[in-house]
Length: 212
Image 1 (cartoon, rainbow, N blue to C red):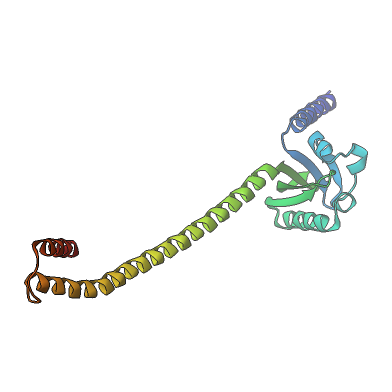
Image 2 (image 1 turned 60 degrees about the vertical axis):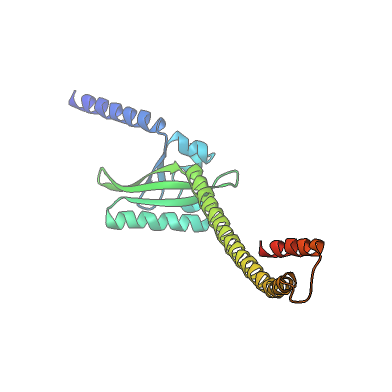
């Protein structure tokens, strides 16, 4: 009777575990110390287009490219040696050839005098894409700001050139105008002889215009 109850509790526990993992929004897996897969949830199979026979008892080197498998194996060993969980971001090619980014959690699992490696992975490709787009936008904004600063500097230089030009022209014009005014004033004062009323009026108008 005790054995039957123990078996029933074990079956119930396994059923709860399976129900939980089957509906887990993250990929989940268990591996032996040697790196052989002994459990993978349905999302794992679905995302990598693998049937149970394709992954059961297989290692990373049987499933993924060599460079990716080497990183996975190195992380597994770090978890086993440190007996601590690990969080890493990995890029992994999918069956369609597209590279996707995963936030991967690995942790040691002690089970019936066996040490296993547990793992859960969340697809963060959309977040990574947004992050890259944001960095690109920030870089573009910085470039535009730099261009705007350069244009502003150029406008300041042009404004200074305009001011210098106006100042120079004003100075150059002021000297002959001053000489002209003195000459007209002397004529009006009849230092050069008598004037008719019409001549005097016209000279006075010219003098007034110069003084404006």
